[in-house]
Each structure stands twice: as C-alpha cells, then as structure tokens.
Length: 311
Image 1: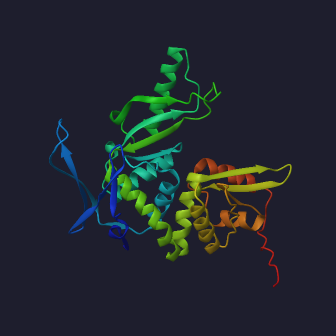
Image 2 (image 1 turned 90 degrees about the vertical axis):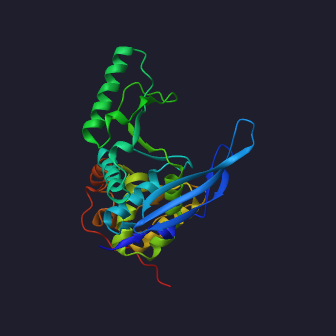
Image 3 (image 1 turned 120 degrees about the vertical axis):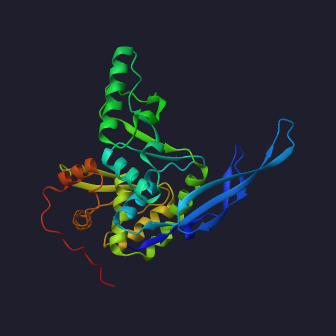
C-alpha cells in the first residue's frame, strides 16, 4: 500500500518554554523510524548553565496513504488545538473520536491509554451536588462505553462546565477533549497540517474528497429554513489562507465555495452544489450533521447543472 513520507513535514525549529524560545530541530532516520530531537541549556538554582538536555520523540517515518488518513488529517485541521505544548482534539461525536484514536494507534503507534481526557458540558454548573454527581457519572459512563477512552486516563476534573452559558439543561452528552502532552508531537503535527494544504493541491480527487469530508465533519454547519427555501452549508476557517485552500479543493470537486474577506464563515449554497455534497458523501463522517443535511435535502430531486455565463 502506498505511503506518505513524514520526513517532508519535519519543521526546522521548535518553540518551548514560557517565553516561546526557539530551538533548532534535528532529526535522525533509523530504518523506518524518524527521531526528532532538540537541545536546551539547563541551569541550576543559581541560574548558571550546568549542562544540556536533549528532548526527543520517535515517529514512524511513513503513514498509510489511504482514505482514512486524509479524513483524519481533515479532522485535525479543523479540530486540533493550535497550542505549542500539547496535542488536543475535541469533538462531541463518539464515531469521530474513535476514528481519530484508531488512526493514531495504527499510524503513529499511540495506544488508547496514552490519551488523557475530560468532558466539557455547555451547561451552568449545577448547585445540587446530588444531581451534579449523577450527571457527571452518566457522562463518564457514556463516553467510556461508546469511545476508546480509558477510565484511568481521566483528568482529576473529569467534567467541566461553561460559566458564561445560560443553559440549565444539558442538550447532549458534552464534548470530549482528548490530549497528549508532547511538545514535539504537537508542533510536528501543526507543521504537517500547514504544509499538507499545499501538498493536497496535487492529490487525487478521491483524496481531496476524503480530506474535505474531515474538514466538514469538524468545521461544517448545516443551516436551513424550508419556509424561505434557504439551504446552506457553512465551513468555518479563521484564516483567509485556509478559506482560499478550501475553495480550491472544492473547485476541483466541481463545487463552488463562496469566500468573503474578513469573514471566517464560507458558504456552499445553490441546488447543484448541495447535490454534489450529497453525491460525494461529504457530510457522512459526522452522523448528526449528516442527518440534518439529509433532512435539509428533502424536497430536492434531480440535480440541476450550474448556469454558465457566456463570455
């Protein structure tokens, strides 16, 4: 099976410490392994240099070039935290959490029990301790039963609440945040995702489809009002460069993405474009969004070709 060489995505430097100090990143190739490492001057209590510390991380040099890899890289582009210190991934769909954890296990050799986790609930923290205890117990049971997280890897505060919300009733099972504490892994993946955006321009239509399936599962939003015949799919992207990349990818798939300056929401509308989303199963990775999308598409029948303006 074809592989992707991770050597091409190794960054040239690392940022570490409270001040974000920059260190040159080096690597060694050991057969099918890629060893990343950097050196930091260490000091004693009197603030004098007393040695050099070496930090390292071992990765497989190659990952499988298949549909799942492109889907998961799309998910990571949309949902992975952009901090320099830890790899953080958050989602409220067990199926997506499982696919992500399985990919890391198979491709980067990271076992399920290495992921620390906590659950964030969009709810005011209950005052009733009995109700709060039962609620948190049910949430932990749900995620332990329906995902690959390990109970013993739970953070001490297993459930957190959002103080700014007005919600007093939970409307879902919360969002689970899974995390690996590794500066090297986190910054390597950040660099991979940045470089991968250009890499994808030269990939096959099937690979672009899989990547955008991951992006939409993470950052897509289905919005419709059948009374006013409004049907749209939004894709959030905070950076203008990301929005332009998404537009290019979807254009390769025959879909027109509307991009607006200084506005992070991009929009897919019009019957032909929405039918292409359906035809390519671009929303099928996220069960909740897919169900809403299918509901929105009811009433549409045969796809209509886009209008072509003559020159």
